[in-house]
Every structure is written in C-alpha cells, then in structure tokens.
Length: 310
Length: 230
Image (cartoon, rainbow over all chains, first blue to last red; front, side):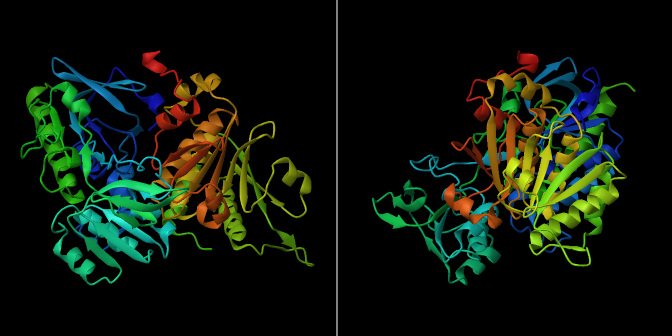
C-alpha cells in the first residue's frame, strides 16, 4: 500500500506491527473477520526468509524460507491486505484508542498485535564487526557459497546452529560447530544428520574470544589462548526480542524482554496482543508464531465486539 | 527461457501499476547473421533480452526496450562506461545514467526489478520526503550493491538502493551487481557476504539494511530526520 494513501484520522480495528509469519497469520484472519486492518513493518519476511530449508511446516515437506514467505505474501495479496513499509517508534494510549507514531505518520487503532520478532545476537568480541561480510556472517543461506572448499565454524549449539552447519557442509571442506556447552540442543533428526556427516565436527566446552584476519578472516582465538585456523565464522547464538515499543508502553515482559502473553495472545494491557518470536512462548517456530497471531486476531475481534459500539 | 505462470502473473500485475511510459537500454553482445536475424553468444545476455522483451510485450506499450551491441555501439558504450554485459541501463530524461543492472532480473530478482520499474515510472514511496529533504547533505555518490540469486535478503535491499538513485535523479548512482558472475569484483572489494553495498569506494554496509541505514551512511550521520521530527 502507498503510504500517501493512509488516512491519519482513521481509527483502524487492528494494526499489526511486523512482517513475519506471526504478523501474517494475524493479518489473514483479521482480514477474513472483515476487520479494518493495517500491517506495518520495517521489512517483509522476518527471520524465516533467511532459512535455507523449512521441513517442519505442516503440509509442506520441504521448502526454502524465502519461498514460504512468498507464499504468505501471495495469500496476503489475495485478500488485499494493506502492508506499509514503515517503522513504529512509539505507541500511546488515550482512552480506548492507541496512537502509533512512526518515522513518517501517525496511525490509530482500537487494537494492536505486536509481532516484531527478534534480531540476531552478536558475539561482541574483537574482530567481529571489523570482519562482517569478510568472513563473519549471520546468514549461512546468504554467504555459504562463498566458502566453497574452505574451513568454517558455526558458533552456537541450537537447532538453528545445527541446521546452519548442515547447510554449510554442502559447500565447505570442513565445518566446526563451536559450542560452550556439553551437548548441542538440536532436534534429534538434525543431531543424527550431524553425527553422520564426516565434514562436521563439534568442539564442546569452548568459547571464542577473538576473530582474527588481514583482509578477511583467517583464524579465531579460543578462551584458552589457542589460535584456530578458519576462513569463515557463522554466528548463530540466539536472538534478542524487538520489544522496546512494548516496554515503553508498559507492556509486561519477562527477564529476557520477551512480551508475556496468555493463551489468548493477550498482554497485560487490554487491546494489546503479541505473537511470534517477540512473545514469551518457550518454542519459537514459524508455525507456533502463526498460531499466536491467529489467536491474537480472534481475541482482538472479540475485544472490539465487547468494547466498542457498532 | 520459459517463464513460469507465477512470474508472468507478477509481471502483469506490476506492469499494470506503472504510472508512465519507460524505456530501458540493454547492452549485450548481439550480432546479426547474414540473413539479418539477431543472435547472442553470451547466455545471460540472451536471458536478459528475453525477460525484457516479455516485459515489453506484457506492458501494453508502457515499456520499451532498446538493445545495443557492446561491440558496435562504441559511442554509447564509452558514454555510459559499459565494461560488462549484460547491462540494463536506466537513464533520466536528459540521458544521464541513474542505475546499471549487472544481473539478469530473473528468479528472486524479478520482483525487485519490477518494483524498481514502478519507482522509475514515478510511483512514490514512504521514504520520498526523507530522501529529498536530505539530498543537499549527500554528495554525488556511487553505490555498488553486490547480491546473489540465492541470498534471501538481497531482493529486499535492491529496491531500496534503486529508490535512492531514482529520487536523487542520478546524483546517487546505483550499480546492482551479480557477485557470482563478477568474481573479480568480489576479490577487488574483498566480499564474502551478501548483500554488500560499497558506497563511494569506501564505506560498506553488509547484510540487511533499511532506507534509514543507507541514509545514515550517505549523509555520514548528519541526516535531518525530517517529517514530524523536523
């Protein structure tokens, strides 16, 4: 949707902040409920767009993250759901109406679904920023092909780190998973694939403290002082929820700054809902984010029915 | 090459939104046989030609394509410094260069290319006022954006860079470069990750970036926030 066509006086039934699966799930259901809605996001797609392979979305055996997002986009387009590329920086509440200030406009809504996702955590060690794009990467799908027949490492022990390592093994000569714990936390199916892959080796109980190189990365330094030669460092150590606008409004978050929601995707503020990676669900998957977004749409619809006269 | 039904549907839908007629200039290694028919030996030139001709066909007169040979059109090649092919050139009303495309606009790069055509035809954007109000803080600039067809972030940043070029009327020139087809440039600029923007041969932005991030780099942090914060 063209931002010039946005009517700033109009009070929408729901504004969905975000552009990933949770936001889209909420938007599709809100549209089907006949709600007046807007989806506002910095970037369409979310983190799943960078996932090389999604094999656990029911109904789809195997698909790339970007193709999955393209399908979501087509579904949104079929319902004429308006999407605006903008960034919400502050939310205020006055009586029962929310005002959302962005970089360019002010929007109004009776309800909001915050589905702003999360951003990747960084190592914050010397050399990391200096070598970004020159050996340090946060996206194996994007940059794996540049390390053909080279030696790379994946920092992290999650299922996401395991999947990155498996993808990288298609290109690199050798892949090291470097994890500070005793055992990686991958799904059993991915753990098995890693154990069976001769190119992948896991180094446990280890942390890296520096990334070293000249024009590009050529080694890393471990906590014990040992230098280890690698050509690429892929960082997969988790993410930080994008919950600032929620916190500023007074929405309750947990000690990880994830927005606390109940089973109706409700937050502590009536009319505010949250879904996806920004919320405090223990398992963060595209399908669970979509479900939370859908539930948020139901809750918002019922909230409006009970609190606003027709 | 065969375009899928999804791609054709995307083309029709996006071309229907063009606000005015546009012309694209394509540089290839096109030659003529004795019987007058044209041929290209460079396969990506052939692919680019077919995609652009399809756009022309589906556009109901809104898009026109001018193909030039890098071997025979020496004056044009020299004027626009065309060193690589295929190259799709966007120019302003005075014939000045705005954007050079050194990637075949197919697969995941088709939609960003179509978005660029829309901007080129005059469609506005939410960032228009911000970019225009900061133009006097931005020197003449060149952005080389390196992308690959397998990179999921790349289709998101291509329209951003092109938008800046179009709105600045070429004061900010953009080059969209297929890294895999131009590995010598990858080596020259030491690029091992995409998307990767090189700004004025000095500054870099690696990874996904927003228009705000690009504005910050171009104005060297001196941007005026504009809008409601002016």
